[in-house]
Length: 300
Ligand code: B12
Ligand code: SF4
Image 1 (tube, rainbow, N blue to C red):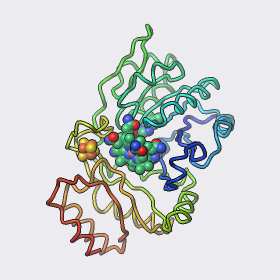
Image 2 (image 1 turned 60 degrees about the vertical axis):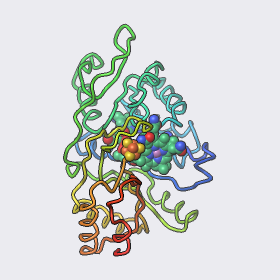
Image 3 (image 1 turned 45 degrees about the vertical axis):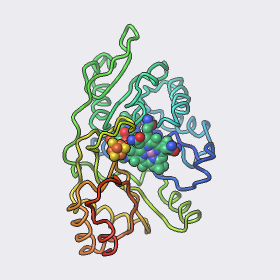
C-alpha cells in the first residue's frame, strides 16, 4: 500500500571514503524528529537511511516497496549532488519531492534550479512538513494552495524562485516526541561504533538555536533564539537510550551547548539522582570562560 512519505538520508558509507575512514556514523537525527512528529499525527512514514545501503538500486527498491506520495530528502552541502540524483529517481517514479535541512535553508535556489525538486522546506521542519502533507492531502490543486505557507521555497508558475518567510520556531522543545530511533537500524550503528571505536555512542539533541551569530556559520536552521529542553525530559531520554541500546556515551548535536551553566549543573544533579549518568561530548563556544565544565565533569 502506498505510504504518505519516505524520508531519505542520502549519505551512503559505501560511497563515501572519508566517512568510511572515520567509521563513526551518526543516525540522521533531524529525519528521526520529523518521522516521529509525522507518525504522531497519523501520517504513514518510513525512512530510507542510505548509511548501510549499497547505492541507488536500494533506493529504487524502497520506492517500489512503499510507493510514497512524497519523498523528503535531507541535505548538507557535501551531499548536494547526491540529493539531486535521488530527487531525480524519485521524481521519475511519480513522487512529489521535498528537500530540507541545513543546506537547502542556506541555498534554496541551488535545489530549486533542478526540476526534480518540487519544494524546499527551510529552517525547522516539523510543523512545516506536517502542514505541507496535510494541505497536499486535502486540496485538489495542491501546489497552488501552498503559496503563502511560511517555511517553504518553490518556483512559481512563471518559474521564478519564491522564498517565503521562515516559520516561527518551536518554543517548547519538550512538546516534541522523542526521535524515531526505531525506524533506522540503530543496532547496526552501535555495532559499527563498538567495532571501530571501542564504545557505542548515540546522538541526542537537548537544545536548538545559537545566540552568537558568527559570520562564518552557515545560516543556522534553528536560528538565534536559544531554546533548551527541561532537564527531566533529557534525563528520561538518556535513561531510555541506555536501557534500550546499552550505549556508553552520548553526543550532543546542538548548534552550541554550555549557554546556560545552571542548566548543566541541574542536569548533572538530576542525572545522578536518577542513575542516568553517561559521558558525553558536545560543542562549546570556547570564549565562554564562565562554564565550570571541568568541575562538573569531575563530579560525574
Ligand atoms: C551533528 C552534526 C554533524 C555530525 C552528524 C551529522 C549527521 N548526519 O547527523 C557530523 C560530525 C558527522 C557532521 C559532519 C559534517 N557537518 Co555537521 N553538523 C552537525 C550539527 C552540529 C547538528 C546536526 C543535527 O543533528 N541537528 C539536530 C537536528 C534535529 O536538526 P537538523 O538535522 O537540522 O534537522 C531539522 C531541520 O534541518 C529540518 N530538516 C532536516 N532534514 C530535512 C529534510 C526534509 C525533507 C525536511 C522537510 C526538513 C528537514 O527539520 C529537522 C527538524 O527540525 C549541525 C549544526 C546544526 N545545529 O544544524 C552541523 C552542520 C549540519 N554541519 C555542517 C557541516 C558543514 C558538516 C560537514 C560538511 C563538516 C565537514 N567539513 O566535514 C560534515 C558533513 C558530513 C556528511 N557526510 O554529511 C553544517 C552544514 C552546512 C551546510 N550548508 O550544509 C552545519 C549546519 C554546521 C554549521 N552551522 O555550519 N555534522
Ligand atoms: S557559536 Fe557555533 S553555532 Fe553559534 S553562530 Fe558561532 S559557529 Fe554558529
